[in-house]
Amino acid sequence: MRSFAVDDPRGFLAQFPSGAIFDEVQRVPDLLSYLQGVVDETATMGNFILTGSQQPALAAQVSQSLAGRVGRVELLPLSGAELLQANRLSTNLETMLWTGGFPAIFDRDVAPTDWLVNYTATYVERDVRQLLSVRDQEVFVKFTRAVAARSAQLLNNAALGSDVDVSAQTVRAWISILQATYVVALLRPHATNATSKLVKAPEVVMLDSGLMCSLLGITHPEQLVVHPLRGSVFETWGIAELMKAFMNAGRQPDLGYLRDQHGNEIDCVVRMPEGLVPVAFKAGRTYSAD
Image 1 (spheres, one colour):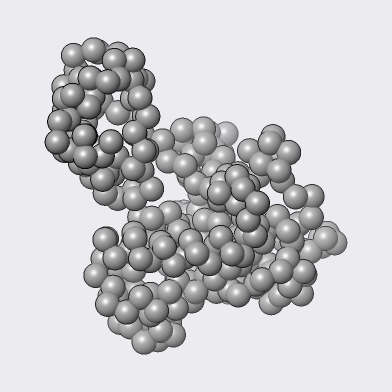
Image 2 (tube, one colour):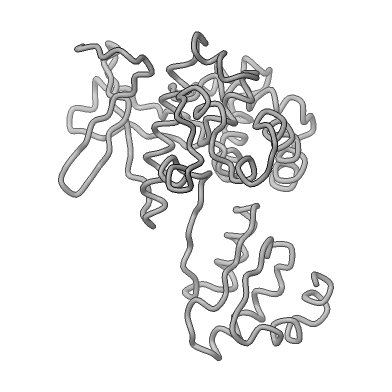
């Protein structure tokens, strides 16, 4: 089918007068130019769904060939609400955090640890090598683990670079790759008028708590009960859930955080039409008034 699409794109598209779903469409980039003609000729919206796991390549090709003709939807791993609706959300907090939300884990009988380890390997081999020349894949994986250990914390390029023996410039480039491939997001500080005493560096947040646990070497949910990064894993999950709520509604996440130079902080600030909603994440089961 791919060869058909490459060799005879008009003949290939003629098979689908009522539309179709094209997966991994970035592997046949020239097809999009011919698809533009079909879309313009039929003037019917929603006939074609284009999906691809390599978002940067797909976005670039779509924006060049189909500008003004597409609606873009970004999908993160499954949200807690989606898993709950499908009756697949664990009622155990540690199991839920450790499993994460990648669909393939729920689609077949596979241990989350096994799938996530292989996902990391294939992600580096497939996506990273095509997006950036990473000479030493082991160093990049080590870097990704270091990022996971700092999830829901301030991004410090110098400290990250020191951990894996790469320059701060390389850290910035690699963080951009993790962002572009939806492994992490950057949570920007909420802007206020009194900015002089506020921390202005972004926070780095993993977008899947299961992948974070895998990168941290957490092989069983029970380890999370007393793990020193339990709070960070929970906060990571919570911020990612807020982002999913926005994106699944077709809106860009409008989140930030607040922290001053004395250590006072609000974990997440959600900007809503009604005003700001401050959120604190606490993994403990006992409420603390402070």
